[in-house]
Image (cartoon, each protein chain N blue to C red):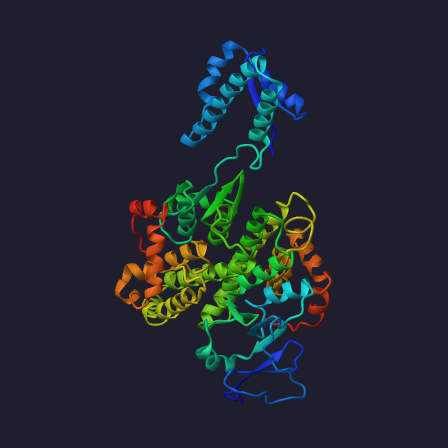
Length: 244
Length: 304
């Protein structure tokens, strides 16, 4: 049951986080909880549902950069009440030094730039951005398998391996091949947001239609590089499997 | 960076100084030596196929004349003059922006859709955006032969890039219309992405079944527009510089995104928009900005 004075959320490691709303003057719970204290340089806090979708890219940037953050996960049932009180009405939200920011890809891009994971010039930035935006397009197609009538969902599920995945994976592979450094990464010679985006975008395909990726060894290489990167490796080992 | 190519006769004449400069700089110069007879035939095909290409060629031809002028100076003048000229020529050829590169060209429909933000960026920057406007039947024929099979896409130095917002962001960065700190960039990006969300809702009123289109047409004024206009209004109010722009004290991509993101709503229901005074003031500031003003004066209205 959700107490109107606080927001119940689940941390990534399944411990419960009680986040106190500003209307309460004192924290209520102590053991096994973490109370958010207002402080000048508090840890960044990312709030999203307990799925990958639009929050996972920012989470991956944090772990790849080995930066500590609060990974707050809201259950869907609590959301309508919170939404009414929220600034932007959408998730994910990044709280940074008392300010809120929204739009998952903007957040991920900001974090990537902060931590040297955004390429080294404007053209590399464009290359990364187009891959992140394509990931977003793909997510919308994948989301169609979860909403709407049964007929709609089935049609969407069929379209993914027949049309969407082959087309999109081909574009990702093409982008990787453009990298003059031939490092196996999307841009330059090191991991960037672009590789994390390709990893995330190909997750559904890799899980449900892995044979499609056999045609795109470049993507498999990126997936391996991301999965074995320090920080990411440990995070993925504990990550729950979610359909989206 | 490609190697410069000199096309000239097999004499010293007006080409030798260029050869000497490149030799002194130990840089490679590709050469095509033509005889006088062949030149008469080649001449027409060696000029540009667009106005811009002709301009780029003309400026090189005029640079050549400058070299000749300085050549005379160096013979009659001091060594300083010679050094300055060599430095000047090398800067032109290998300067910060490198050799003269082809102009980026964007391919899109005549609609605003996902291309307008890039157009507004270039207008605000006072730069021309080379465009190829296609109608839908033409696009459907072109599509299978393009790599991404999506518009808009932009060609930059022989390479194609796509995703309208990525392109607009790149152009904004190139032209000083992006943030000056990473945090400003985040604030700009979130607005650009919200504009995309608005467009997706607006598209629903154009595509899909009649039921879906009706529902979307209802959702826009009842749910979507109130929510997003409120957010834009608040963001503008929260700008500590109180400049009237949404970020900092000058126009950025974010202001253009708000302008473009509210365009369809404004076209359909200007009275509703008057509920958001800061937003209306920002629209005014953008519409009056140098470059944008001239662009909007000739822009044809489209529904999306």
